Image (cartoon, rainbow, N blue to C red; front, side, top):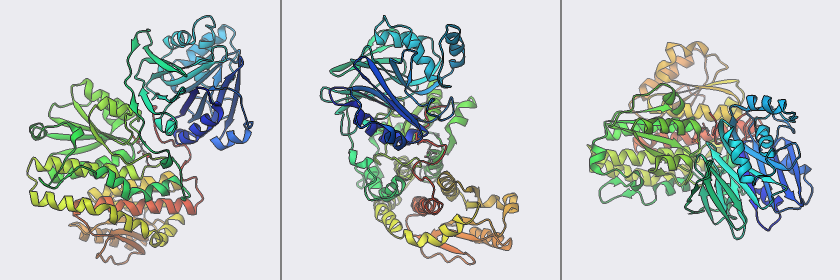
Length: 605
Ligand code: F6R
């Protein structure tokens, strides 16, 4: 949450900062601002609203080659011009941008006010600016370290000083910070996507580290002043992926990118010789895999739902008891961590605070955790140390689409690999490999038929409430479909296990509550037909997502996905639900890529 970008070099900072803000806007979009140091003064521009509102007020040029910028997701203080970052000290010379929460801000604020400091905003961050500004005689890095010694809480921050303009000071405790190395220029950002096309390589700060970043290099030390060594990683990725191209929204582009994303997730991981998958990054020998007695999958939101599908796959294919749990619920219930349980953390961004904290809880209790992650080099990837990268490419829309699909594909591979060291036959393994190879074209064929979803979308868009039903693994798809719809259309969409309908939710069914049922051609189809009849008896309109060859009676509108290996059906059934959410949100004129109140990377508790 909150995007930070900073630059020091020889080029004008303004266009680089604005470009970085545009790329980071998915992290928060209720206000934006920047500060550029030049000739002993700090030019600060900030504005409530999106980056484009800030841009509309910026002068054509702001002189200066060192600056910090920020796009905000408000925690302390409502979104407003004054609460937007950067925040400055009383003299207006120190500029601070911050991602995170200073927990003792109220206490520090009272203390500073007692000393005569006048605050201009309601934010916790302004406290930091004043604390740093109290030490004009020290070096900037010393002033930042002294201020941070007084602070409790989480931060990723970048600081500049008009009086000491040669460096940016960056620091991290819980909020991601990456340093980007260019040619005689350096960057700081909360996500490497801001730096693609500019930095050649990156270094990730760890918690408790502070960096002095100059145009010609950088030094990293602990808050106590001990220098630390940082390995550089090449910054891979194509800045073109950050462009919407011909699509009207990133979400729609990312839905369309799924065939390619799945190909990349599968690349080099299908082992036709032994009819298995090969996930080298999990670093588990066959004997270690045999010793696994249980699998526990942790994640939040869509990552959790992908984990529910993953748990089902592992249980079915490897016959290992497996379960997914929301990461925050897990960490707060003092969980029993078992030696022979494999813990798997799922995160697209690799920065979700609750997931990270759950991993740390497992590790603290001696457990081992694999990551299933999209963002390379992210905090969770580094915390886990081993796992599976999705290689789905950057996901810019706030809601996840292609990374949900790639995560489920990664779980298919993990389940296949675990299954093949156990009782899964080579014939079954071969069938799954063949089925996985067909997925990209099958997904493409669904995306190409988007127009056929219009009647279902129209019915949903005309209703205030919708219910999504499914059984067993299709319940997870119903939950993901309902989440997607509510996130971007703001309609009330609720998912239930179809088997639970008559135990309560049936009371809600009326002619005005469409029920969307996820009904593949599996052993439970007859039960789903009964559910449809129960809803119809109460005059509830039924919409269905099913598979080719299934004929459902008394359904107002339906969409069929191609037939596939039964284990892979959830992947295909989910694609129409993504497209439906998109169509409904478009019809209602919503801000699809940046829905209200949300941000992509939830780095606060
Ligand atoms: C839903 C969505 C969120 C995220 C969740 C976890 O569309 O995007 O529910 O899935 O915040 O995020 P990551 O995967 O980055 O840990």
